[in-house]
Structure formats: C-alpha cells, structure tokens
Figure 1 (cartoon, one colour):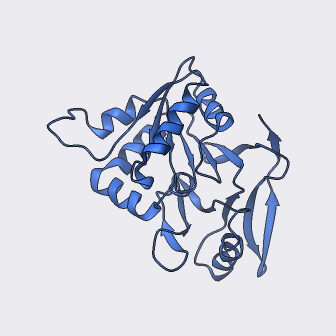
Figure 2: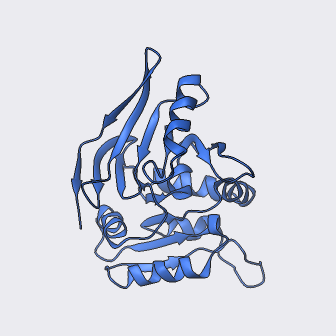
Length: 230
C-alpha cells in the first residue's frame, strides 16, 4: 500500500493541484474530502472547493468539525476512512491541530494515510503533515508550530510570497529549532510516496520547491526537479 502526500505552498484551491491529487488515487471518480478546519470553515473557501470540483471528475465532500451528536451519527474516523483523497485547507494551523487532537482526527488521518488515502493541502494544509514549521497562528509574529510528523522533516509554505518566511526558516534550521525540510513556493507542489520525494509540479516557471538544509553552518537550497502543469 503506497502512502501518498501532495503538498503545495498556497492554501488556495486550484484545478491543476486538486486534479493531480484525484488522479494520484488511481480511481475513476474518487471521493475527495475538503477539511476546512483551519479557516473556521469559511463559506467562501468551501464554495471555491465546490467550484473547482465541478471542473474535475470527483465526488466532493466537506468534513465539518462544528457538529453535534444529535445530527451527526457517523464518526470522523468513519468519514475519513471512506475517502480516496483528503485536502486540508489553509488558515490557523495551531487552532486546527488543537481541534483535531481533541476529536481524534489526527489519529484517523494517520490511519487513512497508512491505508493509502491520498493526503495533501496547502499552507496550514501542507504544514500539518511535517514535524514542524513557522506559522502566523499566534499574535505578533511568526512562531514555531509542531505538526503530525507523517514526514519527519520541517516545512515552509509561502516560500516566495511572504518576505519573512524564507529568512526565518533558514535561521530556525541553522539554530536547530527546526530540522532540515521542504519549502514550497505558492504555486509549486511536492508529491511524496512513502515519505520520499516522487516529483514536484508547478503552475508556472517562476515557482519551485526546495529541500533546505544546514551544511557546515550554511543554508543550502536544493531545487527539486519539477515539471509545469496546467
């Protein structure tokens, strides 16, 4: 059973990335679940997911965490295990992780990942799968947040669009606060299979993904070979 993860720098939904995730399932019309916890289940965000799904061959589903036991009889675990692919949205990573841990969603996601459900997302939806990274989830400044460590490396989204992200990521790796890891420009994605880089895809020539590490006290950014998709 292959474990697959498709992560990208921006939390915005795009046809190419969601289509790529759907095709990675190997199913003709896969069940694609959007988990918008990090945005507080923003209505416009959910609507944009449905707009994208109308353009690709998927069966869309949105998993809400704001529920009550009178109306919802299916567990979060049962919902997640029934999906072929799961995309996690952007927003407040710290709040999202706290809710998931309280509800056991993190455990359900790991079980589904190990069973071959394709996972992914952007921004908070990419950061959560790694061991840690920087987040704007707290007041005043970017700070470190821990992820679920499906991949035991750090991660930095928004690598080319938010000016403070890149230097802070470098400093945290050099200081040992974060491990070596993977960075994605907003319009670039990495597809991992069994925790190893399978390929990188980008929406244009200006966006890339990188492996970032400390070599003898200096930051090295290895560009990951990518292909451009539309």
